[in-house]
Length: 195
Image (cartoon, rainbow, N blue to C red; front, side, top):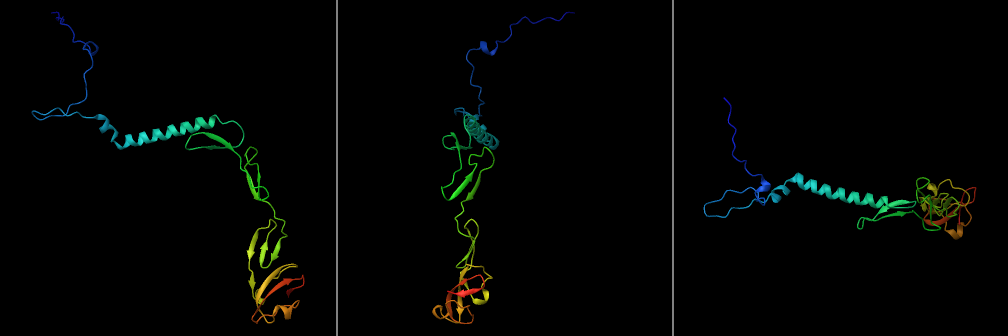
């Protein structure tokens, strides 16, 4: 026996039904009430991972804008991006003339090197302050007792608080401790003297 094939027409496809109907799900309603509408956007965007993804997308967009700005920079130097405008610029590290020396400030030939300019002060100790070859104070001990005076070198100066004689009476003499006079001292290459 041969099966009979239905000859009834097929239901129309959606494009033949006219404009698409609102397919948003309907919430159940009570008798006599309007059907409340479910706003899927509010539901969807309240999911924490969606909020995280949106925040991530915003950061990626900012990063893309920065990369695009950097790609348009021409010239040598260190690249700086203005966070507000997104513009990129080349910068060169410089120092104040006579105070700071900068080698390779644009970073082209290597890392920029920053150093202070030598002051011209002869390394040594002056009035209890010790200076290095660049003129930096590396140690300060302005006040000593006679017993705590360092070995010293010619031209060093300091101050002692326990000399047995005042400056006028002891000028040029080696200081002797145990007294109550404060006097400046200098090193003459052989030892400390009051003066």
